[in-house]
Image (cartoon, rainbow, N blue to C red):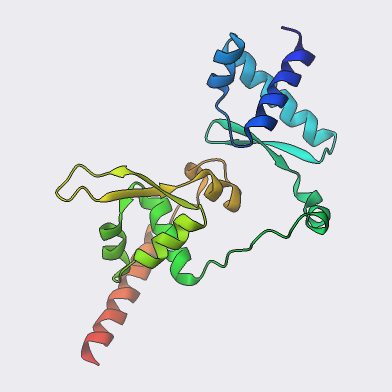
Length: 189
């Protein structure tokens, strides 16, 4: 298939789908090799950035999606209704961090780490589409498993959870000791 025609078809597919699309699905629909689709997507991504177009092609865990270029955002909000901004409180950020690093994870595992109930925080993160239900753990009671979403990746500017910062073991130990000291103080009060 001619390169320009392939780019036009893929661009149309990505535009119409709105969400991210797996190159394998595109390859199947076009009856071509996945590598040909991935190569085309990468050419498109680089070309759009070099041309400083108003849209970008982003990769999210191996799938691709069309997005508005960050530098056009301030102009976009002048026309469109300003998007609702969610406030991530310390509690929500702490819960989200646990989910991001421990996924798939149950509410009871989150509560064990945080030491308090996490129902409200998890529900808010689901509402904000940063967290999703991944299924159920094969254990008594079949507790729900939670993990992060593509919206989480977009919001934090990473293409996969492997890009999250690695925690320094010494710092983790310091946090653990501080938390244990705080817990001991609370017990004596």
